[in-house]
Image (cartoon, rainbow, N blue to C red; front, side, top):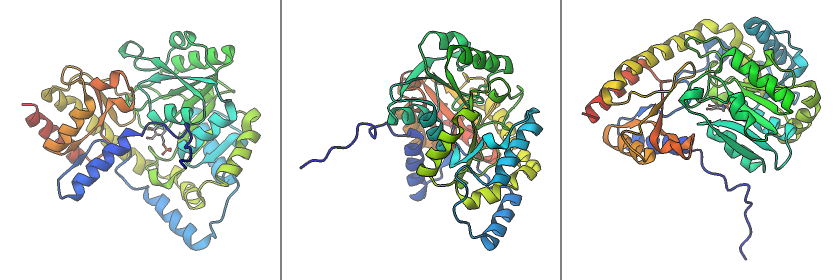
Length: 380
Ligand SMILES: Cc1ncc(COP(=O)(O)O)c(C=O)c1O
């Protein structure tokens, strides 16, 4: 007898993970692969974090912690908002999570009911859409282009009846940012229209010009999601956080207790040291900036000359519609011919992504220079 499998589990793959596997297989067979597909820092956690982890390993039993996170870390995160954004935040509202991925699950479950409609500007981080579908929520794609700098606008949001809206600034895959006034307008509109705003601020700290704003400055009902995975270079430590309105706190706590019991204890103790490591972390950002400048100067010579404005994060989102209408095949060929791995746009925008690519510049500057050299000779 064939047993049924749920339709909720039938979500699409996260294609970048499949690309990473193909690149790893190629590297394992001895080929020289340049990884411009990975969406993570190429650096370890800062040394202060590693030292704190060593101390915790020796000195702490590392059992479960409070489901909302260890109080010292929640307090440190509240101080972070005072220092970075001049915002007074009650540490009670800070919830430590298993990566921002855990925060999405908790926030979507706490704020929405099955069938609720959640807007997101495409191209977008694919897990938003896929997690929403798995939870029987309805992702509503707000098609954004160069005119909107690939971000949601009040105009786009107004067009569709929505229960929630996810924004990301800087965004993955485009790197574009919402200006403070734009985020404020969206936050205000959402409050008046009864739309729950979820602001993904995971790439905060990695910016190349525009001032970064947090939705916390403009809305008391928004859910703020952030993570130690990107600026703090602690991707595999699986630690993130959210700031929730008091009215959702107990629901989030009960969900967290039952789903996760607690976020990883070792990572939490180690992360306490992360706020003292800014010098080391800012050096990573300086390298990202150098990589970005190098690629923006060199890639046009290889025919890649149409990019979304890369205000932050570590991605270039390239329009390659003049080179291919099948980005997946184009990426496979690039990997096969010259060992350069990048991600096809279909991961982020199933329709228009056939003509786009995401190039990650989180690696070393030498890797970027070599990738540019290979791409130029490939396209000659
Ligand atoms: C925009 C965005 N949000 C969330 C995540 C998930 O990150 P994590 O669960 O490691 O915090 C990622 C990962 O690449 C991302 O790009």
